[in-house]
Length: 263
Picture 1: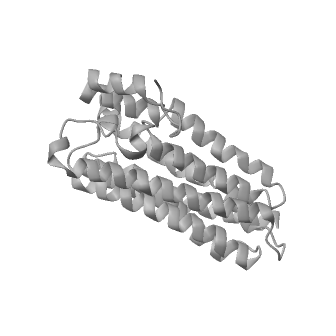
Picture 2: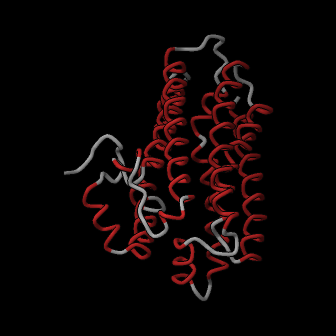
């Protein structure tokens, strides 16, 4: 069983780093590193498909968790893809800033960055590896609770993305900040629901042996959102583009939790 799991992990690593290598070549050609976000999302459905084929756990459980991952990753990747493709030759501000900071070796550093993203796909998939190895023929309460929370979270994330898209489509909103719907209560409701999705995977994994180890995934996602590529980079770019308007928005809204509105 251990050898089979290690082989599965190794195959997932090889596939993800190859995908990210190809994506880096494309990004280098079009001078737009933002495409990495699209394929970081799509790599999770790829891993899920590999687990459907390679993992030897209970089939119903495998199909359930892999279906959840495929739906979530495909929706997120498609959403990001539409956004990036619209401005394919105009790199997002976060990556433009990195390109400046990493000059004159930006291409080499972006290659390392892309490969790290591919490895992170596999590392963050700890819950999926644990769950798809579970041969217990009955689903547990943890798995039903995890599924229920996942439904709420993915609908919330999709709602937040839709609200922002609708706001941006209105030409009257050019230069303005989206502060309607969920965005009225949180500066990053999409990030919040994204994290909640990872919490649902952790809860689902608790129904399997060693499922507690899956806590590493939502913990890392939370750290990345608050300290690395999520909120800090996004807000720095928003301040650069919106200035005082965004600073005022920061002062009246929660950075993360949608139900906490500042006075």
